Length: 345
Image (cartoon, rainbow, N blue to C red; front, side, top):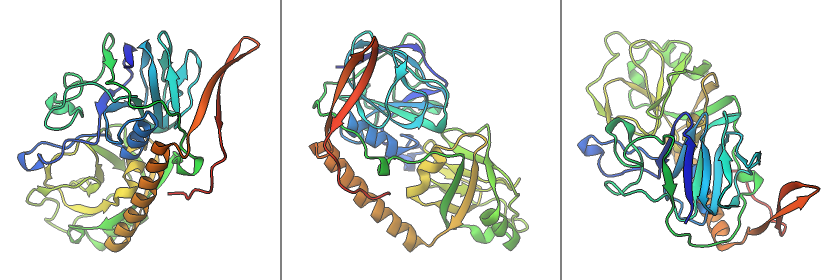
């Protein structure tokens, strides 16, 4: 069982899993990891089921002291992860020992990183999930973000295989993002010029973006007269709402269950991670695709993701990690057999 003591909490560090599903009809948002891909791979690397609870760290990460060692893995954004002052590798299994200091700085690439503990973070399930929903103070660690003095423990580990995600499966986090969208369901609420502005304009991620939505600033999207509001209806993840001011909002993990602004498009599920990892100031451009194409993209993604997880969990990509001291400097060395060809997702 791994136990961490929170010396500094970071900007926003919460416990998240894949979310609290089945309750949106009652007005309760799903919450869960903003970037499920990074969360799930961090968990698999730590020897867990993909949907286990882990720590989601946003923009600036925490400083954690290890009270009891075990397996951990960090996936997602580059938050300058360090162990005892030396770089901590991302996207691979790491063994930490009692007394180690894990520190995370500001985001160099991406926005959110996930720290998985072998066994999963041990907090109570609330309505079938350990995810934190801050607006209702629900789930996670007392329904709140981590703060100094907290202790975060894991349940018992299930294995000690060391793994690393092959480079072709590690996303590239840049400052410019091309995001595919399926137009609708209310794209007819906008003028042709408004739709054109949305599909050709460059948008910047605004500073007031959060887990509820990625707010964008750029060319105004013009509504048809009297059509800037609708009777509230359900909102899926990735829905692109456009309020009366014409600036789009892409809804993320903590989105409300219904909304009264027309939705010009919806981000395809395989590109949602791009919005979750976009930092304030990053550039966003939208490209339309058909619903059939969105389904095809998801099938390809799911095939490759399931295959990757299976190979990681069975040890087909397993290696061994050694800590070697040379001339007074400690190095983490990874030894593995060569891996066959892998496809980019």
